[in-house]
Image 1 (cartoon, one colour):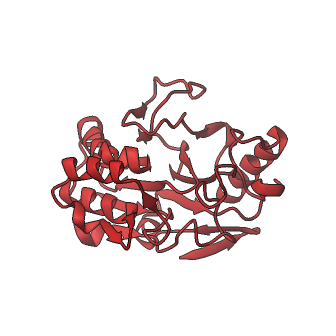
Image 2 (cartoon, one colour):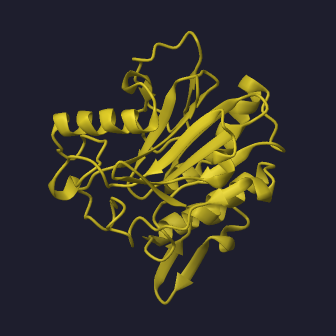
Image 3 (cartoon, rainbow, N blue to C red):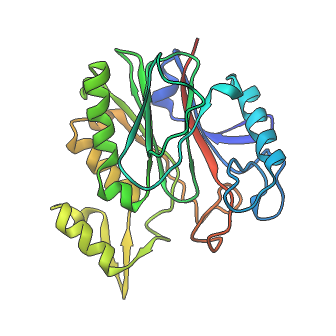
Length: 261
């Protein structure tokens, strides 16, 4: 569901919105101050955007969605399967390399940055715990979503039967061609790979949303508790940055979730 707050267009999951104890959003690229290829709500410096622009964008998002910009936590995303656990002993200034974050602390906005990869939000409504996952094809292959659920279970006692998941906007099967070497890796790891990998003419197409949906179901989540955004980041240049479409020089949109104070 596409929404708008002070010129920031974002996507919200109705299933998550039903829980008043949390806030979340899959932000688009609109409503910021960055220019050029980073226009306009870019949250990343890696491709050369001005630091003041990114700081402004973070501050504006924090104001619009009601969190302290000092409590916005991201990680150095490395397309792996490490999970950053935030508890009362964790310094919020600590920067780690990981591709998922979990916490049960209030007022901490945990976030990932994407420009084609899949952002996934997980909510444990019984134990009031949250997670956010960054899953490109490498993270999907390493089953980062399933490993995050296991970590939530071990840390917070999360039960998969009540866990709610939202799969955010990413590059769609329509635009995501992958090499045959990548296909072979998935074939060797997932018996059901044909559900999310197809050969169209001479091109192998990978459906990252479907692959992660299947992982969530295999982890034990109820299908009724899984929501999927229907946007393709590559198709919708008006709404999203896309690493593939923009020839590797682009901005990054942010997705976040927070337990409210």
